[in-house]
Amino acid sequence: MAKPGKLQTFLEYSAAKSVLTGFGLLPAPAAMALGRSMGKLAYAIAGDLRRTGETNLRLAFPEKTDEERGLLLRECFDNLGRLLGFFSQFSSRSRDELKQLIEPEGLENLEAEKGVRGNRLILFTGHLGAWELTSFGLALFDHPFTFLVRRLDNPRVEQLVDRIRKRFGNETLDKLSAARSMLKILRSGKSPLGLLPDLNTLDDEAIFIDFFGVPAATTFVVAKLAVRTNTPLVPVFAPWSEEKGKYLLIVEPSIPPDCTGDEEADVRALTMKLTQRIENRIRQYPGQWLWIHKRWKTRPPGEPKIY
Image (cartoon, rainbow, N blue to C red):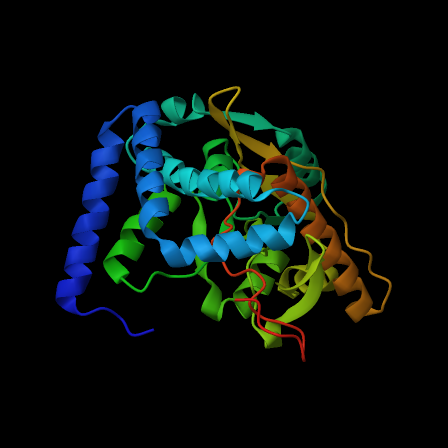
């Protein structure tokens, strides 16, 4: 994609900064409520995204009624808006204020792995709830790490977002040039490494793993890194709890790689396990995943297009 021109760059940056600054001046509950209102507006006008979501939800939940799937799709847009409101608080609130908005669960799982492995760990999450919190929140609780990101096309907006993500000691790594850097980070023990493996992946970086019972092109990079370096995977999720009125920051027990000597089989088995962990959490909070993403766009050879 072509980079935006100077005027477009400035206008996009000004809009992003104004929204984040304005939302950040509001109390967190008000910012998240306003964000949800924007999500509802987006639902009303984003016809293409709605159609993608409807297709995905039919694939994932064929047993549900149209009304039930429609409610989940509305919740998806609400979740994105709430995430915007919550993200706006990251730069404007103190560490203690931010901690009041989060309820951690299972931090002892991460601490136990660190006690054995130090920082030689791979953390992963999915686009569920406030996925930005999985990195930001762990740094907030004194567990910073390095995670892969897709740099935004607008460099000024990218700098704005990156500054917020790194506020409490995190580092970001451009996923387009990260292969050697990831291995170097893992082998040096500089910091844990974080990745998001739940989006559609191009053929040359993917293996097909069932996701909600439908083969999905899934990156094998996470599992290959784990197998080649004998590194456990630590799942981290940040769903919204309506009951508690907070985001949960959940660290699950780790998934150790089985290193049998058959790398291809080991990578597939580990990719299946991490995909299942992600699916399990989505099933627990089905309205909070990114259903508007074309997760099943890449198809096995000979299969028809889904979208």
